Length: 78
Figure 1 (cartoon, one colour):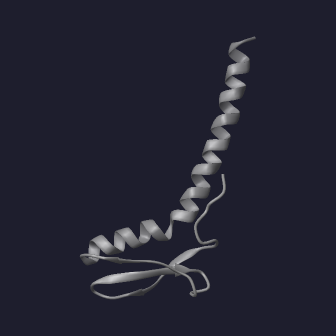
Figure 2 (cartoon, rainbow, N blue to C red):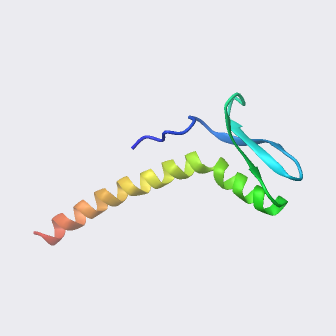
Figure 3 (cartoon, rainbow, N blue to C red):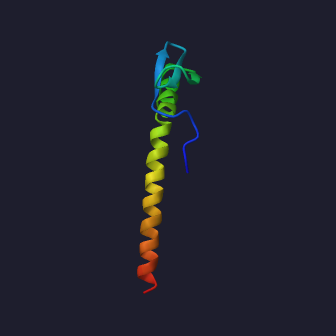
């Protein structure tokens, strides 16, 4: 499974009292703009900013789980 979003690190590049802009690392690719209360948009912006890293983390856990599951199944069927 390959991440289909904008490649590379995402970052919050602009923020004021009403929202934040998230772009790709080179700053040329707009990912999204989040709005709301300061606490809300800061939390949402952080979550979106970390999406590529979370995807890779979940993918690594998933592949390790499959390996562990296969090993366990082999042990149980011996």
